[in-house]
Amino acid sequence: MNERLSLLTALKDAVAAFTEQKLADVKVEEIRAPKLIRDALTETALYEEHEIAVIDLPLVQRLRRIHQTGLAFLTYPCTGHNRFQHSLGVTNIVDKFAKSLMRKYKKLVDSHAVRELRLAAILHDIGHGPFSHPTEEILMHMPEIKAELLANPKFSKAKPHEMLAYYMITSEAFRKVIEEINIHYDLKIDIDRIANMIVGDMDNPQMEGYMSDLINGPFDADKLDYMPRDAYFSGLKMEVDLERIAYTSLIDKRGTSFDRRLCSDVSGAHNLEQIMFNKVLLYSSMYHHHKVRAAACTFKSIFEIIRDHKLEVDGHSFDNATDFLSIDDYDVLSRFEEIPELTQIIQNLKHRRLLKRALVISRRTAKDPRPYQRLIRLSEDPTALRKLRDLIVDEVVRRGGVCSVYDLWIDLPEPPSLREPSQCIVRLTEEKHVTLDTIFPADWWLTAYGETKWKGHIFCPPDTELRKLVNEISQKVLKDALGVEFEEAATIEAKIPGLFY
Amino acid sequence: MKSVKTADDVVAAMFSFFDSETIPLDVRKIHTAMYEVKREFPEMLKEFSFSENDVYPFSRLLERVFFRLQNSSLISTVNPDFRECIVKNESKKYIRENVLPLFENDEKIKLEKMGKAFERLVTG
Image (cartoon, rainbow over all chains, first blue to last red; front, side, top):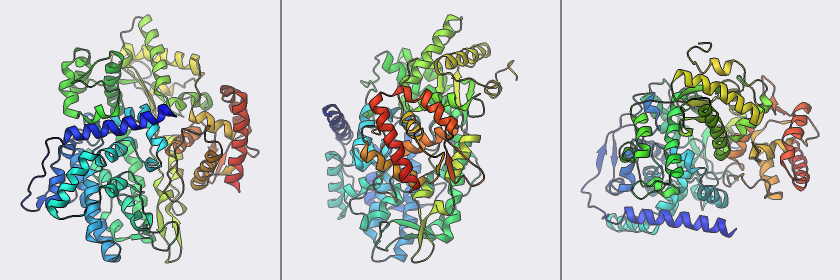
């Protein structure tokens, strides 16, 4: 217990120290007037003076240098969009929703609530590490992050980057900045409420439930921005009817357990269904695209090399979460290249020399699905997967192949969460409310996604002979270690020249 | 390679103690039941974190575990309406032979109690 407590304190203190350092030279600037900021996707929108002061903070400006969709730009060339653009998009969308709710609930939603919602949107992603999600995959297995997410009910539905944002925002240094802004612009911004919204928590659900739902809820502004934004920049065709979703959004006020939560009129249900459809499409087409996953694996190798070789980059060893807050995508692609042990792997990413498939792991490609369970259950256990990788590489090298463990990955990507419909309240009549999944059972989709779409892979360097060798050896290692055997489809789908292809 | 126990193993082991072959495939009931079971056996389900302020307690890890158990056919559903979650006797046998040996005897006793409690809560 003491060890867990010390981990929790260490993380909070480390994030606070990091935030203090980043804000050390920051002075709240005098902003002369509101500013118009153009966005390619949402709209040209006006930002108040205090919002510009927050946007100008280095912690927010850093988001310009973090890709929204990780390394997907190596596969979908137009996905160069970043977390900064997304954060402004979320701000524009939350504004639209809040003002729609304001018209319906004048006594409940006021301009102060809109102001805090907009600031929560601007700040909601400041805890992201380089390339966003690939870093998140590293963070979620760090002991201090796991301990915190499990121990603190406040973070019961937060992701690692949201928890880090919470600690940054509630640090003394950040509070001081907001106090200055409050005084300077004559505001009463409650930074704790903003931090709560980001992690989907609420101290006073009877008053604020809908606010947290708008920032971190079943159909929050975050989703309503990232889906159309990722689709637009990737070139994937999909629609989200924002106007209609905002128009049909309601606040439940019946004095039940759903009290003051965001809900939708039943007439908007099909628009919410459309979002779920889009989510599945984005996963199967982009987020789980084998090339996108291969690049994410190479990214994770960078930090395995740093850890295994006890390296430091600019004084950071990346054995703790805050080190990832200290860098951005530009640092990874430039500063890291200067470290001799990392030069090759960074150049591989820069020049798009990506790993290729040696074996496809899926329900369809496994001979007997039950032993296959012994493999896919390891997706929560990177240490066990690393041991398997070591076994495969040892045998590859023994057989004369040239391959390092950093170039060989067993990738079992996290399936999409389709929790939203089971958590989204739909108003059928004034008295009758249900959750969306009673109208639209999206959990069936998750089952279908698993059966038809989800794939894991063994990736290795692109040399054809090496791929053949890794294909053969990995099948043997997985059979010996876990009893899992594969159909020919596992090789056919890997598209290795000369092997069925 | 020595096997380690995972969250998937805990849930699979619980399911092997079901009296029946089917439980309703109802996300709300499943997550709420597991939340209740965790309250009684916190040390066995310590990796599972449940949201405290949602319409019902939800665990992202449980969603992933369910996905994998379905994906590997240890539990199955029947088209077209996916209303029931099926844990066939042959799956239970597989789990008893391949998953349960990962646990100590005192853990197996707890897992049996957990499985029965979960089944009662979900079907009740």
